[in-house]
Amino acid sequence: KNEVEQSPQNLTAQEGEFITINCSYSVGISALHWLQQHPGGGIVSLFMLSSGKKKHGRLIATINIQEKHSSLHITASHPRDSAVYICAVRFNGGATNKLIFGTGTLLAVQP
Amino acid sequence: DTGVSQNPRHKITKRGQNVTFRCDPISEHNRLYWYRQTLGQGPEFLTYFQNEAQLEKSRLLSDRFSAERPKGSFSTLEIQRTEQGDSAMYLCATQERAEDTQYFGPGTRLTVL
Image (cartoon, each protein chain N blue to C red):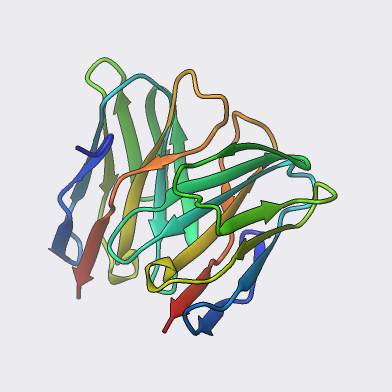
């Protein structure tokens, strides 16, 4: 069982739809990251959360520490949002700040 | 462009050959990570440097793999006697402070024939 699980694995949406991607993890964390990866490999950090909620443009990320769960929401989705979205966590008590990644959610937004 | 560069971007090699990848971090970032990503999977941690010291290595890093960061700036990852299972994207990420986000390079895609 992966320590970080994401759902869904694949998501197809129509332009303008509200999108939610979920992430669950198994043990206590010090931070959770949402990352975006476009074809070709480059990874960009979208959010880093340790509690509550953050918003940037059409993207919103929330985290519930007690339930060990985070969600990434995209409002008014657009084809340029098509990418792989990856959740990654930094576990408590680690000697380094290495990230443990989920397998990603492949999002395709159709015009 | 995150400011982290990796070279080469693509490498095709024959099984049994040695390969070396380079990562140049953002200049003030003293923390550097190497990750490996295979198709359809999230990245997996390989090793971590703080300045020139290699502080953690994953058990994924077999004795064919070695990483260095000789002056605490750029880092190299060498794979000796490559195997087809080494085919993957090798990602470098750097960080200024422990509580900061990590900035990823574009990756080096390795194909072992």
